[in-house]
Image (tube, rainbow, N blue to C red; front, side, top):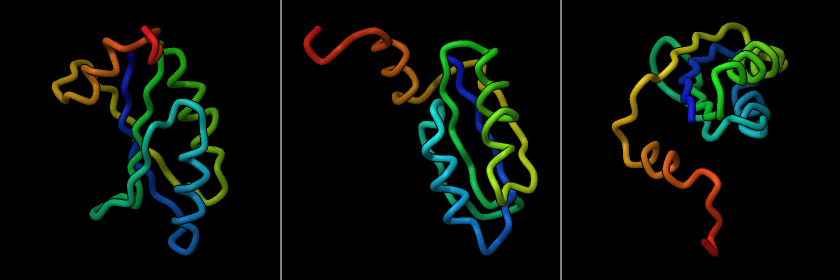
Length: 95
C-alpha cells in the first residue's frame, strides 16, 4: 500500500464542501481540517505509486475550490493503522 499525505489550500468559504467532495474520491481514506499554512489534509492510500497521479492531480486538484496542493509520499509506516491495513489487503471478514 502506498500512502500520500496531501496538504490542500481551498477557498475559505468552500472548505466544508471541498473536504466532503475530496472525501468521496476513491483512494482518499480520510480528510481533516487542519490549522497552519494549509486548510485541509487528505490521506491517500492506493495500491501502486502510479495511482497517486490519478488521485491527486487527476481528481483532487480538479475539485472546485481547491487552490493548491502539496503532496508527500510516505515510504515507511510506523502507525498501527498503516500496518494493519497492509496486512489485511485481500482478506475479507470471513477469512
